[in-house]
Image (tube, rainbow, N blue to C red):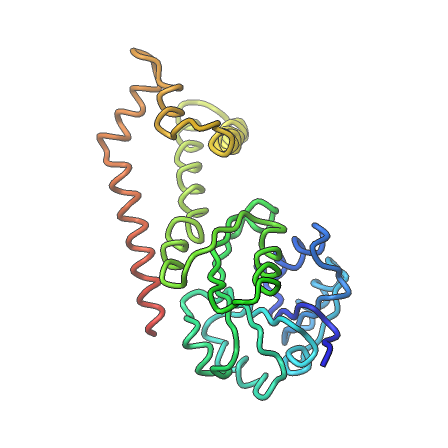
Length: 270
């Protein structure tokens, strides 16, 4: 049976809004091909006003009307969501739920379905995020390319197997918070040395953006070479870099990522 909509999204929160907005505004999918459900009329009204997509409060109606269904709900809400689509006609699903493995999803909605698991991050909301996706259930190239294309319309996409998604969480899904912390530490240091907070923020944020662009366009240079290019012998930068190295920056980052990955693994078993 031909489905009325290409993509259904259960959940109208921050990340689902970023996905729908990015996919529609990029032209990857037409707003007429998207249906979004949520129990909150306020959230649905906002989604519809911002993106022009169709909305409903009926999850089963959505699942029966869409070729692909994307779960964008909190993990603790999934049992209720799964019950609400029991017996639906859809068998192609996408999940951005952290810590809910494909096997756990299939336990609740049936083993004869395909699940793609994806780990986006908050910069997806500004069209410059990163997403790790596991599409190993999808042996149909057309379906797999649709899922990759959906996320590629607003983010850089890396394809991994499910057992690596927690690592994706550690270095990408959660790492915007790490960058914000580092940026704040530099802003605070600038303020303590006499800059206004606005000036310090302008300098730090734009340096962060520019450094990211240089990393993306480094023309075969290594990260170490980029660091060395700023560190003149006997200059100022090398003194700051020595402090970071002596303070164990690299080890600290590895410990932070490991803590995040370990917690993500624990949550899979909750």
